[in-house]
View (cartoon, rainbow, N blue to C red):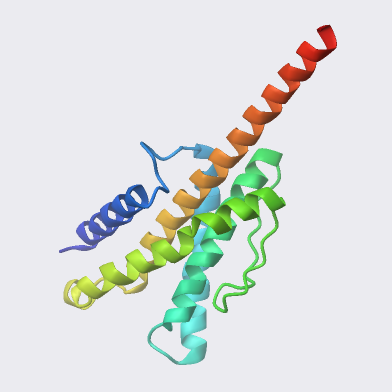
Length: 188
């Protein structure tokens, strides 16, 4: 199994799990404007993971550090959507990347929706299960072990962004309904 095949297998696994757990209905909402945010975040993650691992002198991240990365990416995905919709640049901080204390700036309703969905925990679990089944693949095929992690984090970002986009679309729909109701009342 080569690098591309390994990535495709992991992507397929993440997508199937997202559908199974209700994070992805029929298809993922696509916002091309978020592609740059996703790419910049993955580049940041790649560098910070390498730096963190080398500073610790360990070959791999601990389970709680891996789980923290999924939470971090989930929060950043919603912030990326918020920044895009408000016309602001997406500038992800690095706080909470490895320690589980990810600060998150968003409106309370969105935070409540994201917490209720448990995407980060679910995607972390899917990745851990996949990784255990493919434990020797990276070594056997010369794939750097951080690449599957980045692939899983990429999909977590996409699913999280999809949840945030759906949230904002629903908020817009509710505002329009409320506005239409107000218009009817004033003409009434």
